[in-house]
Image 1 (tube, rainbow, N blue to C red):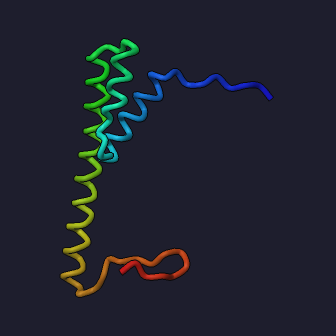
Image 2: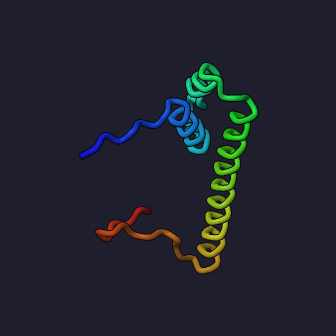
Length: 93
């Protein structure tokens, strides 16, 4: 078994920053921003990461809202429910 090389700390910080923004983490990546600046990652690259993460987050919210609106419209038309069951048959509603 060979040792796998570790990710560079700047790569870890970029991934953490992007995922935190996309997931709406309450810390908002402040620690990662500081780490990226400290290791010399150019500001335009940080801005690109932030832009992409925000786009992914916003797109996910839009799709979630559209799915909810669609589900609500179907439920009101059929007086049914969009609720599905878990794999064991438990209702989530």
